Length: 366
Length: 192
Image (cartoon, rainbow over all chains, first blue to last red; front, side, top):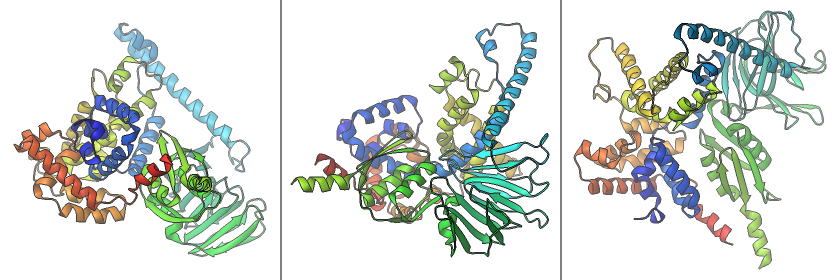
């Protein structure tokens, strides 16, 4: 039987296709990538086969794999690579004794270059921020940034723990635990603050600062909307406007949240839904009455992809739903049904064509 | 492919290339490790440790022609060592030893699903399969065996196995209706 007559089940039962999906054989991978590209008419059967294989194959779920990858990245970029320098590899027949020495020298150069690069980046970002070093000489500003599609779990020197969401960044000084424990946040993070009544833990965002002693809370301050949301899980926090720290303070008790509206500068207190606010920590994507705009922004950060949208509908109904550790494809598949669009994922680019519009237009034509 | 690249091309960006090897082999290693150890967390841990170790070695991939067999062997040794340590009495442990297999494929599979809905439907679906079908599904999708390899292992004819597996897949596909399987609506629109 030719592949063009294959159903999803046939693909699943094909040896070569299986090796392609499981990435067990490079030749099969190349063959099938090529074949699938050349047979768009079979893409539904192929997609269905892959979905089923995703269920059956016992791969580590994508979100968990990403966590592992982050750890590996940190390890690889933090520890100096032990590698033979370029010049030596090209001429491998150099005399042995010298080579060892040269290699270690190269090692030192490589290490110091890496250190210089990191410092440079830190100061570029750090420039113009609120944080002032207290003892500027030995006190380095540390920046942890997650690009889109990445999440991380940080342990600070004072024992506090920070879950940093994707597309978010946190900065603090190396010895921040000596005085007031102050960190600067862009984006979203969940803090579990180690208890220390003498040294308040302060989270500074562009608009607000949150002051805590020993608590757990979530702060969301992405640049794309002007809003900042603070949600308190336990303990007690004090929230004030970043610009005039001494004025107007709001105190939150557990279960309470606060939303600062950057447009009209109003502050609104409300009860928050912990399941909703903290879902991101466990890899669950949750939407409540979300607009397409909000969905798009969230997916962009979450999966580190870029969207191109065609025929965005003028009227839209808000979307509520949750995706528990699903791949982008499954999320889009599911959304595509409720929101009626057709999608295509190519590497880090996602193209969305809303079919609503198309239908409306066709109706008009008739 | 990557192995040749690693040894032939000058790795200007050693870190990126190393991470590429990691990404490209992770799932293969995870499935293999899970098959041997039947322990998710242990497998994850051993994979991380093994790559940490490799990163420390300057000649880490010297002479390696193909990564997958090399890394699998490496992981297997690591897992066996770890399991050996855990079972303080030092009898020899063979991979796949029934003594170690206290978690069946079904249990592992259900545990590994990220959505609760899928967990439920999958559980029900697996119960509809015969023992032989389950065995085939496990060897096929967890171990990634070809029909030839399965045939050698089980002593069943190619065609019989194919039919049994095909039936199993049909049953599973019917029961595990992935919520969003409506590709034909798109087709209709794009034809319009």
